[in-house]
Image (tube, rainbow, N blue to C red; front, top):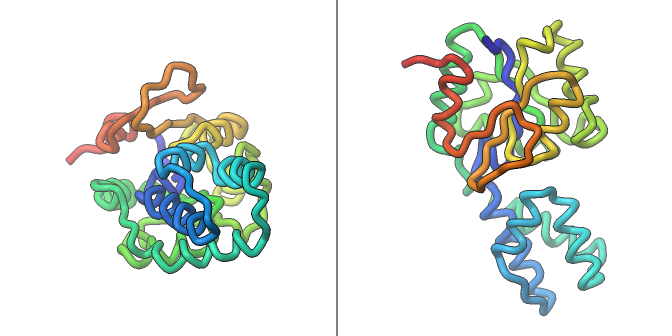
Length: 207
């Protein structure tokens, strides 16, 4: 049984991609650029840096554009909510004496949003951008959690919606679960789920 569950934030715990992508689209439009929302969201689901690099190559925007985008996103991010069923799952993990951990490239806003929706109390530790670890798929942040909390790798699992999350887990020597709404045939994940409730048997959670 997994005793230590490490969660990605965007697209895993919280449904933030629609707001992130639309904020990017709006910022592009303010600069006279039109790009399809679904394309922006698809690139962001690979990684934020992938999306930024793609459109920077096309449109040569500067740091002022990125600053405007971050301001637009921050003004709307509290409109994002946890995926349905996440609060109950995290609460049940906590109630059974097991541990949730947050590992995200997002900054402290992720912790703020967990607090806003009453989820932070279910988490043992948080790793955000401010901690300065090399970005996924580097295993450094996960290895830090394993060491800090004396976690046996076979008792831990990383859950995320991107290949970066999966590779970070595998590179750290722990199992990984991919949460996606798309058909996948080539992932290195130990588990692939399309509905958050599919985590219940994987994590041995019973009502």
